[in-house]
Amino acid sequence: MINLSVEKTASRGIAIAPVYLYQEVDLTPDTALITEDQVEAEVARYETVKKEVVADLAALAEENEIFAAHMAIADDFTLQELVNQKICSEQKNIQMAIAEAVEEVSALFQQMDDEYMRERAADVQDIGKRFLIKCKNASVQDLSAIAEPVIVVARDLYPSDTVKMNPAFVKGIITEEGGVTSHVSIMAKNYGIPALTGVAGVLEQITDGVMVCMDAEAGLIVIDPLESVREDYEKRKQEQDAELELIKKYREREPITPDGKRVSLCINVGNTAEIKQALDKNIDGVGLFRTEFLYMDNQHFPTEEEQYQVYKEAAELCPKEVTIRTLDIGGDKELPYYEFDPEENPFLGWRAIRISLDMPDMFRTQLRAILRASAFGHIRIMFPMLISLEELRDAKAILEECKQQLREEGIAFDEEMEVGMMMETPASVLLADEFAKEADFFSIGTNDLTQYVLAVDRGNKKIASRYDSFHPAVLKAIETIIKAGHSHGIKIGMCGEMASDVKAIPILLQYGLDEFSMSAGNVDYARKIIIGK
Ligand code: PEP
Ligand code: MG
Image (cartoon, rainbow, N blue to C red; front, side, top):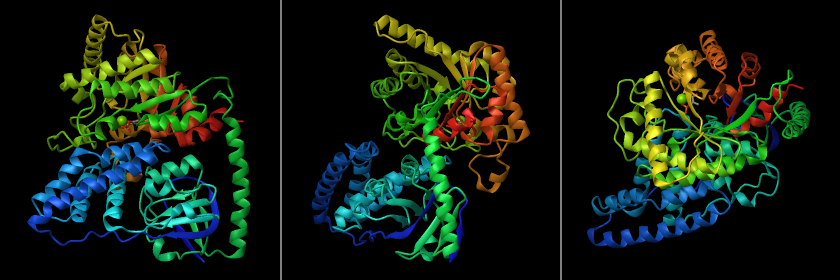
């Protein structure tokens, strides 16, 4: 019997089953250079492979929206240009050219501090894998053939792998790489499959077919358990299954606290696919639409029309409320098509509203798109990272200009659209009273608020233990914001991670928080805690 323990849970739950070891095929690219007269044929070969990959992804996209995004990346001009350049100028063979181009594009994502964005690099690598499998005519282990209960153990799992897994048989997932916001985690959470990712060294310890017990919530893996240990896990699994059934029953119920306050329970999303997946969770809307992904998963600044279509779809999907945050780029989030000057302190630098106000044309494009979409539902707009009333006023003034333009053009929008702001800087806390007079709502961004109040970088592992949203100074900041907002009659939400923390929810309710917004996977648990009986 071997015990392993892991720090972070990707998807909670207990699983007991034999291991299905998923071994990757060797996709190491052929390193031989090509001759000049082979260049043309190699470029043509890439064209053919690309068409095949795009066609495969188009078929998958009908089942799962993730693959629509993958299709766009596979078909993307930048990737093609990079590959062609390596074939034509450096005489790399197609395998090398693809492998290097994919590395370069995914490195862009990997450099980011934000964990969610870092893990988007896996999408790019997944697409690269598809290309290489085609180029090498490789045969891959078929995860769709799994027809008995197993725990899948792999180095990493990409969307192209997870899409093949039948949740009826995959009882648990353990990967050596990947983080808690990777696709495999999201997929596991959606299906309620216990998962642990980033389990260093697990592949060395595990063999195919060996029995494993895992408790993802506690971060425990027991390989080849003693009978008594297995029985204990079986018993706890039954208890957990019963609890899960109970939690699901809460879905029907409104999130009303024991003392009778109806709060809002919303989700945070980065695209409309995430909204669709959460529609059966009885949510009150989207408390945070992070629009930066629209900009980052693109090869150019998204046009007004492109943005409008996305925001309109969101508004129609979620008629109760969609809170769209204007571009929050900079800090750790870069754009593949725009060069940011290097900065000493990016999180204290050119970020979020600062960029929008300095690039008013780009800002107007986004505001017009949001306004136009507001005619199709209940859209609220929210500005990130404000530190002064001037910024709020300037942003509102540009919004007013856009409204006036649309009126003159005879284009409909919601004249009453609420304009709110993220509360995530110490300055906004200290000025909460003043801001509350001019904003229609606040949404507390505890991810940034914690880092700025405590002067603790949210992405620095070395000081992670000091990053504490329960620090009295952070709690005091939250309480101050809620009090100030309420004294001016505005609603206060929270869209930082703290909103779904089971230990934080009772405190936040005590402070009087009106709206809790979180990733969809946490909504059921949060609802139960809010209702409290
Ligand atoms: C926050 O800072 O809490 C927040 C929700 O915004 P982001 O994580 O996107 O910075
Ligand atoms: Mg933030």
